[in-house]
Length: 164
Image (tube, rainbow, N blue to C red):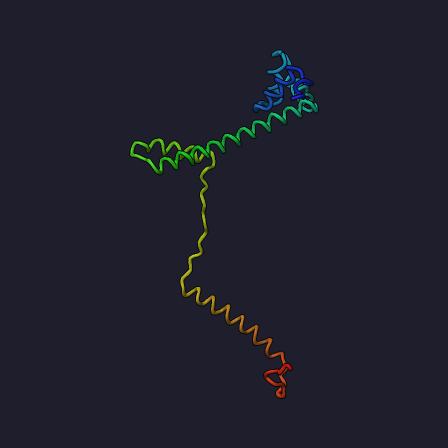
């Protein structure tokens, strides 16, 4: 974290507050000693200028990436824990485990361990399918016979050819 050495403690506090979800202005108010008499416009301008600094923006981006990586790791950890416990429950479940099973289900849903699949099914009768197939075959044979009509056959041509 070489960037931390380039930032003052107040700038670092601003970055942390901003990355935690505060607005830039609120993070500025928290990190710097801003009195109640300070105008909102002044605070906003100073916060915006500070947030636009290359060092501050770089540190903010690092904090956001670290938080996102932690969230992904936590979700993966939760999914694995849910799978492990569900596997164990499948083998050793008793009637008293219903509350525990429900808690695992909810945690699994929250961490994205369960994916609901939906499929659209086209329900048609066999008569409709047969009629559709007949129409497809009729159109295919109509296309094939039109190609045959375009060819000229010679009666003196042999059916087989001898190759010596």
